[in-house]
Image 1 (tube, one colour):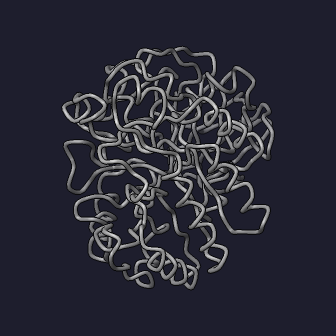
Image 2 (image 1 turned 60 degrees about the vertical axis):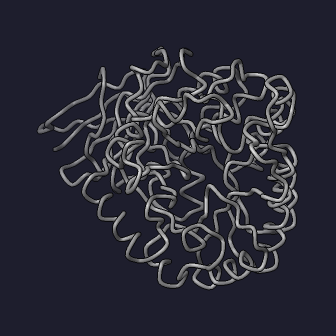
Length: 425
């Protein structure tokens, strides 16, 4: 199907300007100041709308196979398309864990059959994510975007070093959840700070994150392995990454939307929608994270989309499952709270949510390129929505941003030239 998108504010060649985009029957796009063809099957007026490369999320949990009651690849990618995402990376903590060729091929088949967008699965670092034995790095590298035991930190220094050596030998990437279990208190569920005291709960220290990050960065320096830190949450982690980059370590990192926009003081009640790992930290940590995206210490903004059932998130802070959803509302939240308030620019937000991830992980789709496959999103920066459970189409509904108003909602998502999501356009 041929499509002509006219008069859009297009982020193209590092600037936003008025352009037309023509998408032919093969999904190939042409971008120019003005395009006028006679035979076009659909013409879309994108006046006053932002058009950019589809968003890319390096950190999602699609739950299938094994936990389909939480989310499926179909329901998850449908919600991601609604948020403007055309590409996501899925974590391996499914059931079975993606720790072998057999299990990752199983997930790839489901992705092929059910996904609405592009999904790149991670393989785990250790078998079963148990931290005891390394997976077949060499064989799995042919199937995976990178290696991660997300949800658990790799506790053994020797195992992590060997994994980095083997991953480096196949030009792969280690993606690490940094959490030193020796520094965790039994039952820790929120940051070890003022709210933990207020609710009389065990806290999770910042040291449990940054001490393991410090170890990993040293190992990455020694092994020369490309290393990416998941969802950093505290000031010490930002400074460690900043210094490691200055020292020439081949490293990158991500921050979630919720860690950028919230801190422990925003935990208003004893409810599971405020429970995630890592937890919301202090105001000072939040400010350090914002400074980290501004000075490019932090490379990308992720969602850590982690859906659970309503029952699993309704047991209070102590007993609820860790994790919240975020893919449908990530860009509008960043636009509303950071771009509109002039904390970062719109082009910075787009780079943090698309281009940087594609560039670091070596995939296509992070920018709009003439005569290549069309993967884009169209946003109405003036349109206002309210985040409600009814608004969310993910199976998971738990978010600390419930009932907040957002601007910058997605009106259309196109993947490989096909309209996957559309509303009001």
